[in-house]
Each structure stands twice: as C-alpha cells, then as structure tokens.
Image 1 (cartoon, rainbow, N blue to C red):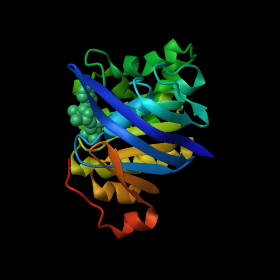
Image 2: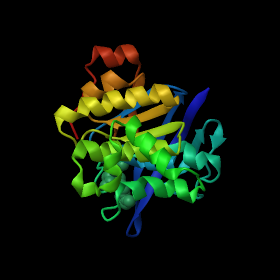
Image 3: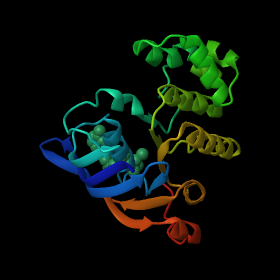
Image 4: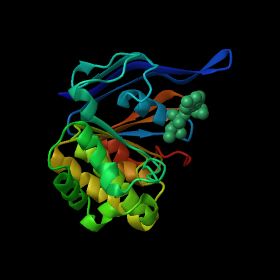
Length: 240
Ligand SMILES: Nc1ncnc2c1ncn2[C@@H]1O[C@H](COP(=O)(O)OP(=O)(O)O)[C@@H](O)[C@H]1O
Ligand SMILES: [Mg+2]
C-alpha cells in the first residue's frame, strides 16, 4: 500500500502582483513502512513540499493522497488524518514554545484531543525518546539542542502518526549528537510502524536512512534514486 502519493504538485507564492512558483510538477510515491528522501540545495522547494503534505500550506495544485485519502487543496486536514501526519522541523528551538514547560508543550495536543492520563503518556513518550521525566519540568532554553530535538520528536509521536515528515531533523545539531537522533528515529519507525519522508542535504544521512529518494532542483524533481543508486553515490550535490 502507498503511504503517500503526490502527483503534479505545484505551489505558487504571491510576490507582489506576480506569483513565484516554488514547486512545479512534483510527483512521487512512497510505500508504507519506507523512508523516502527528498534531497536538494537550499531553496529548491523541499520544505514547501513537506508543508503541503502536512496541511500547513493548503494553497497548492495537483494531487496529494495519504493512505489513499486525498487531501483537498484549499482545505485544512481534518479528522483522523490530521493526527496521522506529523512534522518535525529543522530548528527545534523555534518550533517549541519558549515560555512553556516541556510538560505543557507535550501535554497540550493530547489534552485538546481529550486524552486521559496525559502525564503518564508524556512521561512514557519522553522515555521512548531517551529523556528522563525531569525534562518535563524544564523550559526549552534549559535543554541542549539534541534534547530539544528529542522533545520535538516526542511531540510528533504523542499523536501516534503513521506518516512522519522530517525536515532536516539533524542539521541544526552538533555532529556528535546527530547519529544518536538518526538511530532513535530508525528504532521508533519500526516500533511505531511509521513511514518517513526525510528532507536532508547530507548525502551520508540520506544513504544511511533512505530506501528511495529524489533529488530536487529549482522546484522540480531531477533524479530518482533507488537503494542501489543511493549506496553507489555520485548523486551528491552542494550542501544547502
Ligand atoms: N511563504 C513563502 N512566501 C514566499 N516565498 C516562499 C515562501 N516559502 C518559501 N518560499 C520560497 O520558495 C522557495 C523554496 O523554499 P523552501 O521550500 O523553503 O526550500 P528548501 O526547503 O528546499 O530550502 C525559496 O525560493 C523560498 O524563498
Ligand atoms: Mg527547507
């Protein structure tokens, strides 16, 4: 089964009187359980593709289906699908509310959905991402970059997503903590049965994590890479 089908996706931003088309005719399919990579230089449209799939930008043309359910352009994602698609952002600091403690950052999305045992679930999920329950009482600025990204991953996991969109999840982190986060993601993918879309400009990360990938250039897909092509290399481009 396909976890994600994208066909002829285009996204145009209004720039004054003119429009700027940041993503043009992008299409790909991702099988459930796979990690699919989106690679390309800064500004080529990777985040724009993810934001459309996540429903954060509904102003797109084309087709997007998640587990065979079509998203509707111009409409927010509603119902069960909304929890099933989660995104982890590049910069864990700006994506966590600076004046809320971690307990609240993680607990609020659950409370909104009427969950019981919010505290237990928060503690359990912190443990799943390798953090102690003491972290729940802290503010984002009291954590290291790696801890903050673990919190951001925990927040995405709390809603038990089936499709996790990872936008350069380790590029804001020190090299020494990157591997720990990538290994954690791999473990969680298996135990939660998730599908990943991974945006990265790091060839090593993509070759290590992805089953398939596409390279993007100026809003379009340039190349499709299978496992063998990823392992063989030679597709690397300038870092973004
Ligand atoms: N909200 C926006 N309004 C106008 N232009 C945007 C907006 N978001 C992104 N862009 C432009 O779209 C292009 C693709 O951006 P983005 O998807 O963030 O690239 P990437 O993630 O590959 O670095 C860039 O030229 C960027 O400046
Ligand atoms: Mg980006």
